[in-house]
Amino acid sequence: MGFKLNFFKLVVRDLDAMVDFYTTAFGFEVQNRIRLSGLEEVMLVLPGERFNLVLYHHTDGRAVEIGDGHGPLGFITRDLDAALGHVLASGATPDKGPIDLPGMRLAFVHDPEGHELELIQIVRPSAAAEKKP
Image (cartoon, rainbow, N blue to C red):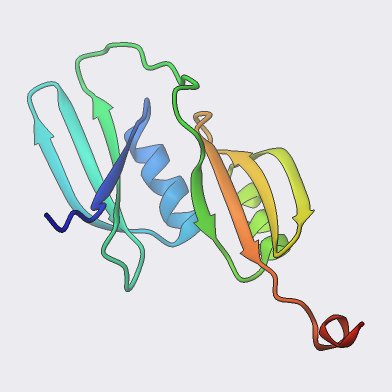
């Protein structure tokens, strides 16, 4: 069947503010915008990637509550400390971390509307550590 994951949707209260956050904090680019009766969506894509993050906004005034029915949206980075500082300066709020684990470092933050995000840096052992008996 050849399934591939193509997009993930986050329901947001303030579409323009969240587009601004994700483009500023992570470098997403707006790929498309759709307006239909009762909803508006903005498709975001990272440069060179095909996977889309879709920000979905109800335009009929209904309330949006952030639930706990899913885990965090995960991002890989080469430099966790720099990435964490950047997303916090862009409007995210800290949650947990940085946490050092075997082979990785990670931190959890929340976007301006409360969606949980996970930042992960893959850490390879240094040459000195590899030579230890």
